[in-house]
Amino acid sequence: MKMIVLSEDDFVKVSDTKDIQPSHMKEVELDGEYICLVNVKGKYYAIGNICTHEGGPLADGTIEGYEVECPWHGSKFDVRTGEVKNPPANEPELVYQVKIDGTNILIKKQGQSKSSQIELTLMEKDKVNGTDVMSFKFNKQLNDQIDNKTVNYIAGQFAFFDIGEVYNDPKGPIRHFTISSSPTENFIMFSTRIRDSPYKKRLSTMEKGTKVKVKGPEGHFVLHQDYTKPAVFLSGGIGVTPFRSMIKYATDMQLPVKIIMFDSNKDRNNILFKKEFDEWASMNKNLTIIYTISEEDSQHQEQSPLSTSNDWKGEYGRIDKTMILKYVDSSLLNNSIFYICGPPGMLKAMEILLQEDLKIPKERIKIEEFTGY
Image 1 (cartoon, rainbow, N blue to C red):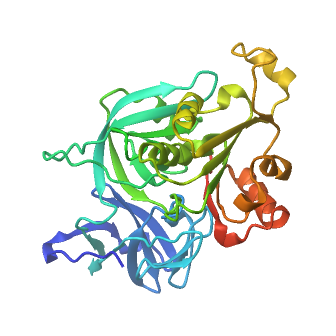
Image 2: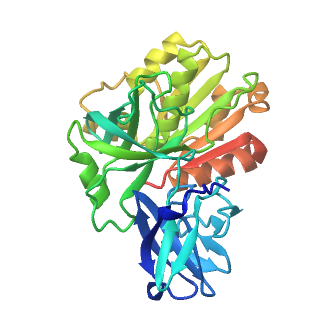
């Protein structure tokens, strides 16, 4: 459990008892932390409101007994301890001490924790031509530090970004993004598709120098440490972001691990980081990248002025058994760790492909879902 005990004068009023009926929940904010207040048979509990799996708002979910269920993917947490009671989440929630003073609900402020909030400054933003994808680069040095401390994370992890001035977004004012930069780079970057939500509109219009609040890192979708086992990455669209981080890290650190990535996109314009990937593949003898596009070639020729009829050296169609076996022999197949990242439909299709068609055991499959919000 992550509870931190502070002095008695650190309790702050956040709500009134009449505002939360038995078996109901409410989101409150305290010092930039979003908290889920819960009433269980007249006793009040406080737990972090941002699901540790994919960032779902717990207060919008359901409560049964002492277990709150995330409305997005069904993760459950014990409101008394923050303990995970049902996957896919595997990280516990912060819990807060609650005190009742008359009809006032007071919560004790937290000290520093593993996922304490930091502040970063936007250095640069780039739109990928021909797509709705934008990348955002932030300074790696913490704004509130004078001793050159930097953000520490493992390649493939994600963090929560509170960019401020987000109003009336049904998914709330915070989003989580995979950190697509490598720990070996001198910036923090994430890349995302810009949608028509209040959060994404605010994100796309942020100016250089904007300060954002970041909480993390979180997540276990990271490269395994037994480098005798090859890694096979199955990527769909924007799901390539954690693989960029892992590949850059493995290349910079000269890790002795064989990596084969199948990168699936609808057309050539939507292949993210291709120039970087090709450069790293030329430097890293252990890295092989197979690009595949799902559009027919004739359709692509009409839409993209960047290509000629004979310059595509990748594959066509979605990732399937035939494509994988073309590049992954039986020895690799039987020894590799498989990583899947992409939209929900792609994840389900790849799970079936690996487990049913290729007979890959579940313990050798790692999954990260991109919900596309």
